[in-house]
Amino acid sequence: MPLLFTAIGVILLLILIMVLRLNTFVSLIIVSFVVALMLGIPVEEIATSIESGLGDTLGHIGLIFGLGAMLGRLIADAGGSHRIAMTLLNKFGEKKIQWAVVFASFIIGITLFYEVAFVLLIPIIFTIAKELNISIIKLGLPTSATLLVTHSFLPPHPGATAVASEYGADIGTVLIVGIIIAIPTVIIAGIWYPRIIEKLSPGMFHTNREVVSIGVQKTFALDKTPGFGISIFTATFPVILITLGSVVDMIQETVGFADNSLIIFIRFIGSASVSILISLLLAVYTMGIARKIPIKSMMNSCSASINALGMLLLIIGGGGAFKEILIDGGVGTYIAKLFEGSSISPVLLAWTVAALLRIALGSGTVATLSTAGLIIPILSQTSDVNLVLVTLATGAGSCMASHVNDAAFWIVKEYMGMNMKETFATYSVISSIISVVGLGFIMLLDLFF
Image (cartoon, rainbow, N blue to C red; front, side):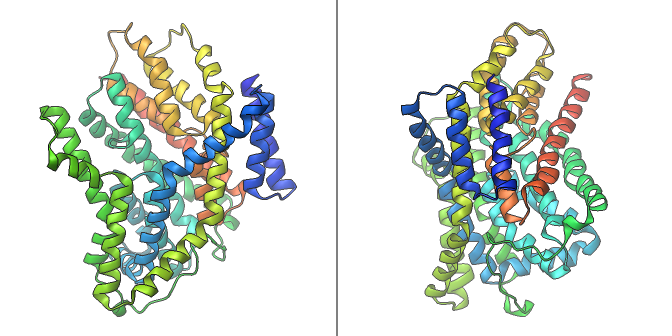
């Protein structure tokens, strides 16, 4: 029954948004209340659960999302995004621009949270699409696919790192094998599938989409923009700081030396929120003060970025509220009971449990960590199992069928100006392809290792 109630909730949400044309945030809150009642959550606890889910989701991504949007907007309004976009275009050419976007997304996505990497890259993608007069979807889908793969498969992302530790898998090996699996997976889901869907539904790739979340973008003469070096350095500075923090943590875990003031400081500046804040201050100097742009003008850019994000943040919070209702209503616990005493391959079992939890709960990280708790007792009874592949299978399962209870679903929808049907046909399918193809490569490796 919990899975049936979840399905009814999703169907009701689609009816409210697509048929009755109700506001997305309002629809998510209404459905959260209805599903909570069906799942038997006490009436007096429903509002608290919804508030908790909304607050936890925005508490997790609100700060880095807001600061990341400001950073991206500062770089865009100064012309840095235009410089990066034109340089990539000149180096790769129009025909290979999707490969350029995938390459940039992979480098940035290895260390940045999905949401942060997306808001940093979207002004660059928008600029390239505008320059080439192509749909933002043509470049946005490869970006979202690449970021989802790096977020789900590769340390130092929280899900992959935490589950590797829980299973006892070597994090360095997980990273190396994860990259080997990630590359062909990204090519299939991020390059080939968008090309197929463009041939099947060319009308979806029209160029006159209204993308409110990005806001109005300025136009520039190339010689009036910051240099490519300083632009790319400013845009990737969060990557540098987070990578530094991750490397220090990995070295400390391997060597085993104690904390000291330097280690604590590096870990502090390497956290997502702090690294974005420092990078924003760097952008104020490199994109503004160093180019004699008034502080007031830069702060106007920051305000404009947040104004464009207002409704999107509420929608993401609403998705978090729905997710929390499903968790508090025992959907995850119900799925866990379905697999008690299972004797299938640990690799396949890890993927299956993670996929079901992902579909039901929405959060890939929650699905990953919940799966670890269910799989560990089985691993303790199995001697011949590759822990690295079990870790990656869990990550692959956590990508499955992104839909309305996933924050990334709404981010992609709003930033690319798509409707619900288009988002299901593109991002939901891409996330499923990543999950299934990733599992295929993992099972192939399992035959040899």
